[in-house]
Amino acid sequence: MALLVHKYGGTSMGSTERIRNVAKRVAKWARAGHQMVVVPSAMSGETNRLLGLAAKLAPAGATQDNGRELDMIAATGEQVSVGLLAIALQAEGIAAVSYAGWQVPITTDSAFTKARIKSIDERRVKADLAAGKVVVIAGFQGVDAQGNVTTLGRGGSDTSAVAVAVAVRAAECLIYTDVDGVYTTDPRVVPEARRLKTISFEEMLEMASLGSKVLQIRSVEFAGKYRVPLRVLSSFTPWDIAIEDEAVSGTLITFEEDEKMEQAIVSGIAFNRDEAKISLLGVTDKPGIAHQILGPVAQANIDVDVIIQNVSHQGRTDFSFTVHRNDYARTMELLKTSVVPKTGAADLIGDPKICKVSIVGIGMRSHVGVASKMFAVLSEEGINIQMITTSEIKTSVVIDEKYMELAVRALHKAFDLEQSPP
Ligand code: ADP
Ligand code: ASP
Ligand code: MG
Image (cartoon, rainbow, N blue to C red; front, top):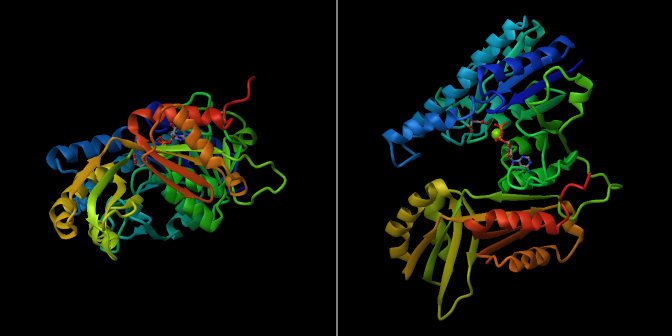
């Protein structure tokens, strides 16, 4: 019998009927003798609804000034979920107790709306488990050193679950969601996508960082750092399926590369439509120019992703980079007021309608020509590539958002990722 952490996402917690199903599933595992910690998300749509209310009163969206209040609002979604799930478990005859992040406590830094977990005090949880209770802990939230409620960024319940698994030394962290595992690409965009039985930690990290929302990237980082076995599986199988079958279903994230296994060159395709592109044209090309442009952006706590600087022509160059779409307006304003005048840029142009499409695979390390095949496929579809970035195990391109699905489908086919025919 093991100590396990189950995480249930928003869709899995989407109605009282679904919460009852989650409770029945957890009760099955508890009755089989496992010690259970459960980390649910807010009911589907709830976090958007809550943030939408805030947006009505603060049309500029999240700013550094209102982050604390946004977290106070958004964290209530998960607080409702833990209470409901504990009640549903009790109705199944299972002793259960619910905790908000601050009650555990899950301590974070003070970066509101994207806080990082610093430590988790496991004593309370361990005592409840020893007393035979199922412990239900709110995902997505924590508390900073000053006692402020914080949240971990969208999709953050995955990270809560893995961090809790590390703290209580769980044997495995099971991420229950609305798909039955990690696929070669988002099955909502490519219905022919194939489920992977296992995926290497490195590939999962790339997929998550490049936009596959199935796991929040920090959850994968935590799992890798502390070697927590992590499995993604469906919460929509009948709750009463045999535990032995459920325990091996879905996709396992693996840490050891299996030498014997034939490595696929490309294992998956990720995409991200949350980015926006910004270009400063005709800036004076001199040492320190990148810092002059990106320094103020970093200071404003805006993350920059892809960066490209062109060759210089007559002492002038163009400089482009991408930011999260939520930060687009703020970045444009910042550049207009404090960077353009200093750098002597001839023009500032922005495009929020771009997307980034990436191919990922550890097999790319030992194969040349993978990136050029990607470019050939996109060119055959008449898709113009605006930016390119590569690393050892991925190649990403920035393209016009309207070609995203076409690009993902064409690449998925060209790299033989489709399901083998029945
Ligand atoms: P939850 O609410 O359970 O956290 P999410 O919506 O955050 O669920 O993540 C699950 C979704 O991730 C799936 O419904 C799917 O559309 C999407 N997704 C994106 N890329 C992939 C992928 N490669 N494999 C599986 N699902 C993916
Ligand atoms: N409820 C939060 C969100 O919608 C956290 C999560 O679902 O993981 O982003
Ligand atoms: Mg999620």
